[in-house]
Length: 328
Ligand SMILES: NC(=O)c1ccc[n+]([C@@H]2O[C@H](COP(=O)([O-])OP(=O)(O)OC[C@H]3O[C@@H](n4cnc5c(N)ncnc54)[C@H](O)[C@@H]3O)[C@@H](O)[C@H]2O)c1
Ligand SMILES: O=C(O)C[C@H](O)C(=O)O
Image 1: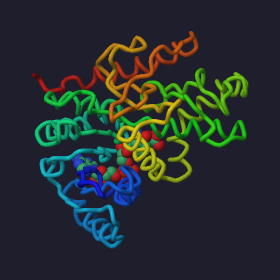
Image 2: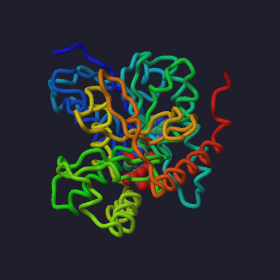
Image 3: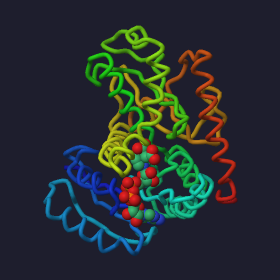
Image 4: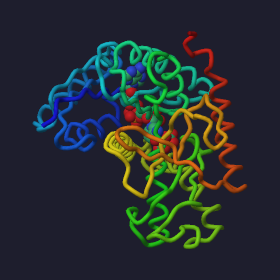
């Protein structure tokens, strides 16, 4: 067994939290030889519920669970953490505009970014799941001037996994037969699930499906999948979101498979014409715990228009929250 690492999860008493914590504690995220100490953050009124979750975690007697800290103090929650999964967020209420949602979440992710800046390990891996995930990640990152911006990522892996599943179903294959699929941009309905580089059983995906299905069915289905789950379940996706969060952190830590890549929301560095300043979904590979954007992919006019649209949305979201960035 390795030395334990500290993993913070916010919104730990929520529905994603309930689907996530037991899998992290069981070793699904970092492996069966990596003990974890969970740091669970909740708002004060949710602490009794969180206590019940802690009781259940203990009752599992997981070999890889080395301790649990449950708190409503963000400075305690992020003390010395190696990983932080920022799940807790303010859901959209009735009559709430997107702008109000961004503002309400700014009040959460600004202080959390600062607390990570002040207390987390210098190589902390941060994944923002709480919506609007990309812009919440940007707010946190902008409030953590002493941390490398590359520590901050947003989750587009659920969209990536949804796209794999849709394409596998259409082509009568398994998701493991599909390689090199990308979710570009925002975790929102402007995201662009791109199949131009994708292969199914080693052959180009777009030669195996027709353009009408790609454009009129696949892209909108992946873009609208979150809303479809909410309609069907009466609650937003939880187990699949938790599973995608595990995939994101595992691949960021243990690496991506040879000859394939994954999609991660990461600070733009100018690649593919996306000016720095937003957290953008890109195709990435991971080696030795460091991610790198896959370079040199050909982008045709169809793809460019869609990448531009999601970039525009992220720029607009950014413009709405710039006043929440730390001045330094
Ligand atoms: N990126 C994605 O792919 C994706 C997918 C699904 C859901 N989501 C988002 O994830 C978020 C959580 O979803 P859920 O279903 O678990 O919601 P939930 O309402 O069940 O749980 C959220 C929890 O966060 C807590 N919380 C609120 N503010 C907090 C704060 N400041 N600090 C700590 N905890 C706080 C709440 O008390 C609650 O227990 C939502 O924003 C949802 O839209 C993202
Ligand atoms: O779409 C939503 O609001 C929920 C979540 O982001 C999802 O993609 O399932």
